[in-house]
Amino acid sequence: MASNYTPEDLIQYLYKETTPEETAAIEKALAEDWTLKEKFEVIKKAAHRLGKMRFSPRTETVLNILHYAAKPSEQKNLN
Image: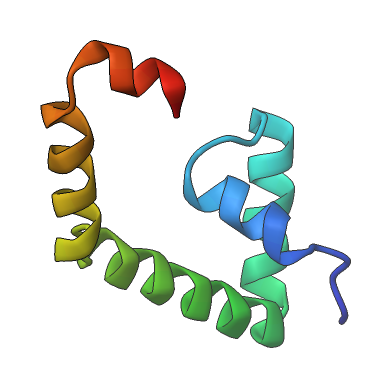
């Protein structure tokens, strides 16, 4: 049985952004369609890994901001 749920639908379900009716329908589809369940598991794992990632700006970016902040106000208005 092929379900017509998109990855976006599954992401909304994962983040509990679906209506109660949509949630029930997706849960029924997940129970009946193993390929949809596999797709959902991939999305769930990716979301979990994404939550663990840490981002930080490049050193060059930080230095540019600090350099700009150190400029007198008159020079900032000219740029």
